[in-house]
Image (tube, rainbow, N blue to C red):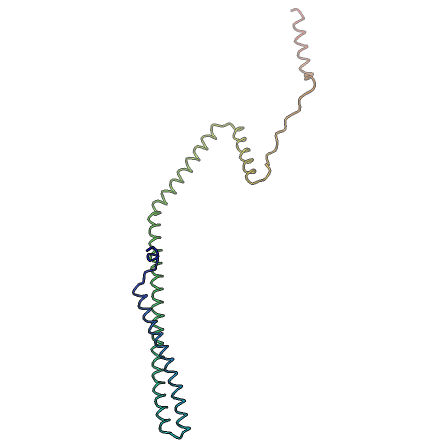
Length: 205
């Protein structure tokens, strides 16, 4: 029962093509029979001529000529049948192509319904609003940071970009001064001022 359900459905067009092909095959078989008769009539005519029966040879050749005319008619009918079969099969192909195009157009219409111009414009508008909001947040945060913090942010951004590209960072390293190893020495001028102040305190007024 399952096998019967899987068999393709035979359409009226399929039956018409099958009938035409059967007629074509019958005509071809008929042509073969006529060809046998033609060969036989030719042989009979030769036999009658050899026996001196010219009138019978003429009759055999006339029968042969008649069979030749039937063969020519059969050729014409056979050609018409083959053209008809080819036309029907090509028309079925055209119908199949047109049906496929129609299905494709239906699918495109459904896609256009799902993604119309208004929805595209709405998506673009939402994307624009999101970019504007992100820009406002960035500017607000930038105003809250000091210049040093902003420089640090830009430097970190450059490092991240270089890391993403696989390029070593171009940010120069921070160089700190060396730790002093001796006592700081006061300038001479500062020492003189301290001495003068001390003398003023020691001398009575």
